[in-house]
Image (cartoon, rainbow over all chains, first blue to last red; front, top):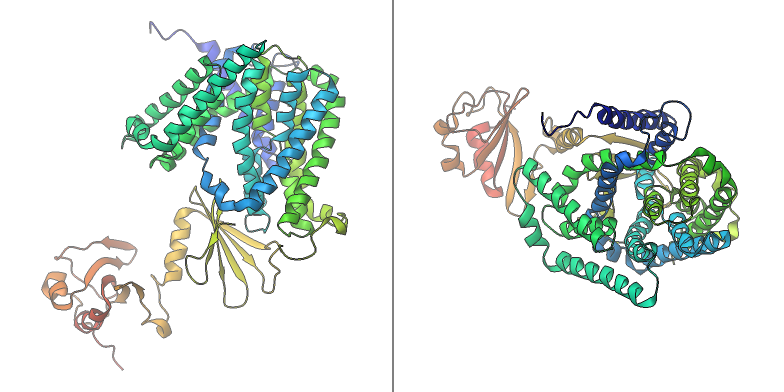
Length: 399
Length: 173
C-alpha cells in the first residue's frame, strides 16, 4: 500500500457526495423534479456554507472529478451531434431554432448589460439564460408521455439547434473569459481556438475512421479505457491551448460520432457520464452560499420572468411556423423553459476567470427556479393554453 | 420534417436524442404511434379515431426491449395463427418464412430431419423448432421432430407445397 495513500477521509467525502446527490434527487423524482438542479441543491445543503453537515469543506477537493464530469457531459453531447438531424429538419426548423436563440441570447445580453456587472459577465449571463437543458427537456418529454405529440419533433429540433450553438458559444466565450487585453493577443487567442476547431472538424469529416481504429477494440473494457483516455487527453490539450476543455471534449465527441462505433461508445460512456456529471453539479453546489443567492434574489426573479416571457414568445412564434394550435404551441414554450447543465457549465467556467462573485449564485438560483418551475408548468400546460389569446395562435393548418 | 415511408402505411420520424417514431393506422380508425428509444425501450401511444393531427394521444404504455420482441412475436403469429390466416406467410423478395405445426399424424412426426431428407427433397430449411418453452435454433440433421413442434422454415415460395406434403401432411377432414 505504498502509493495508495490512506484516503479514508477523501473516500468518505466522495461517497457522501454521491449518496447525498442521489438521495436528494430521488426524493425530488417522487414529486416529478429533474435531477440536475437537485444534485446542485445537495451540494449547497451539504456544503461548507450552510449549517449542519459539511461533507466536503472545499469544492476544490472534488475539482478533478468534477472536471471529468464536465468533460464527459460535453463528450456525450458531441457524440450525439449529427448534422443530418439538422438538415433533415429543413429550413423551417433552423428558422424556429434561430428565432428561439436570437430572442433568448439577445434578451440575455440586454439583461446582462442592464445589471451592470460588466461586459464579460453579461456574456456569461446571456449564455446561461439562453440555453435550455437538453437533458431535462428530453426526460420531460419521455416522462410526460408526449413523444407522440405534434409539437415534440419541433421541440427536439430546437434542442438540436441549441446544442450546436452551445458549442459555438463556449468556443467564443473562452478567449473572452481568459481576460486577454489588447487587440493582437485577443485575435491570436481567437485564431488558436478557431484553428483547433477547424483541425478537429477536419478530423471529424475525413479522419473519423482512423481515430476510431486507434481506440477501437472488440473488448468493452479496453475500448472504454481507450476512448475515455482520448476524450480526457484532447480536453486537456484544448485547455492548454486556451480553447477550454469543454470544447475539446465536445469536438472529440463529434469526431467519434462519425465513426462506426458511435452507438457503442454512447452506451458505454453513459453510466460514467451520469456518475461524474452528478459530481460536477454537486461540486458546483458546494461553491454556492445561500446567503449570496438571497442577495441576488431580485436579479434572479427578473431573469426568470424575462425567460418565461421570451420562451413563451419564441414557442408561439415557432409553433406558428408549424401551424400548431394553442396547446401544442404552449407546450413548446414551456417545455424548453427548463435550464440546467449548460447554464451551470457556463457559470463554472466563469468562476476561475475573476468575474463578479455574484455570477455563480445568480446562475445557481436561476437554474434552481427554472429547472423546477419549468417541468411543473410544462405538466400543466393544458390549463395554461386556454388562456392564450386566440390571435397569437395559428388558425389553419401548416402553411 | 424528415418523414419518410418505410412502407405504404407506416411513417417514420427521427426524434433526435430519443430514437425513432413510427405511426401506423389500425383497423378501427385509431392510429398507433410506436416510439423506439435508443435504449431499446418502446413506447406505444394510441390516438383515438377521428383525432385531429395535433391532438395529444390519451393512452400509452411502455415495453422493455425484451417485452417488445415478445409482443412482436405474438402479433406476428409465432405462438398461434388463427385458421383463417393460416396460409399467410411472410415473403421477402423470393424468400419465404413460415411457421408450421407438426401434428401427431404428420408424416414427419417422430422422424429426424436427416431421415426425412428435408433439404434434398423439399429444398426448404428448418431454421428453428419451438418446442414447449424451448427454442432449438438451427437444428442439426439428427434432431427428431415431435408432434406439437412448431417449425420455422425458410425457402422459396414455390417449394412450400412440397414441404407441407412431405413433413406436415394434409390435415384430416
